[in-house]
Image 1: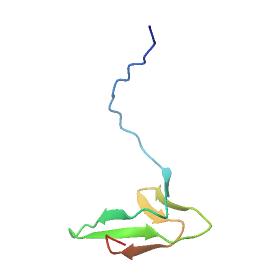
Image 2: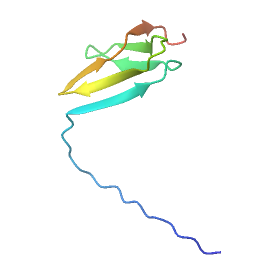
Image 3: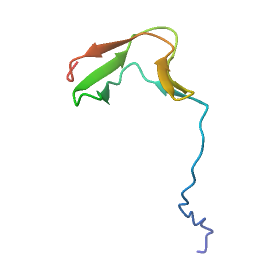
Image 4: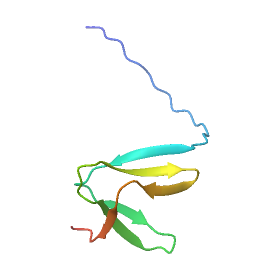
Length: 73
């Protein structure tokens, strides 16, 4: 049986992002490495509204509260 496949080639390209939002699932815990070498874990607050981490003009912010938790929480 013959089939068609698409060959994808990886290409490097520099882009200038002005705005990007990434949805965070409230059941996941996210590891964050700080500039001082420490690591913390963040977890979105459970809410009826979705939490996003937003990258905007070189800065990062959250649209809803997130909390620092222990790794196994």
